[in-house]
Image (cartoon, rainbow, N blue to C red; front, side, top):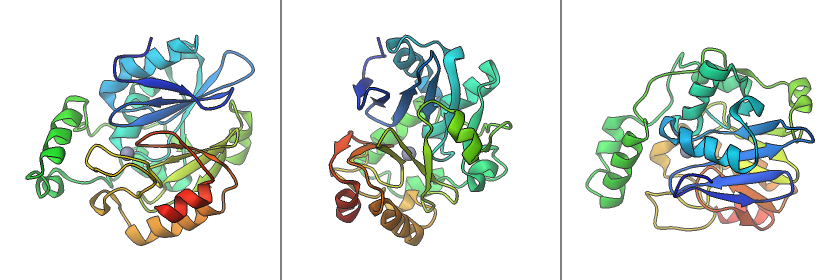
Length: 245
Ligand SMILES: [Zn+2]
């Protein structure tokens, strides 16, 4: 069973979304025992990530690779552990590799967040994510660029859809007709009252104009199932969701 607060949603025969109150990750099963993870929660989500693998009958060593939509701590936290402990390959867009290795950091600072701390939602959220290990500065030295040849060998043969803006090398993935959009398009967030297709608050986005341009990229994706980085799984044409956001 997955840890309390984590729901494992079967999106297709091969694609499962782990939805928590703070961040999501995606599991893609293959024809064999292998499984692909797209994103991997906070460092403190390790037990929950392992719980979702177990729910699908998979062990940590069955994880063929972890794809990152981007290298923010809420999406790659437990990938740090997989890479160190199980030598799990971790891939992301070529433009995100330096970020994943922590050669530099493109993440909202504590000082920027402090300006929002008068809002109860933000204050509560900040305390919760700190407890999940949000303040770690660790990177993944072995992170590498996902090439087309590599992607073809992974469960589900995911197709990268580059969506820079939230970070410089942010990338979405199309797998089994499901769009895994990371933080390029979300449907809810602990700091937001709104439920439905949206961009993250601009304080979290490295480049807001590129975020909007990436929505146009997503609008061209022919799919009707969305697993966002935050919020619920959504079933509607992606072009409509991108337009609403
Ligand atoms: Zn995020």
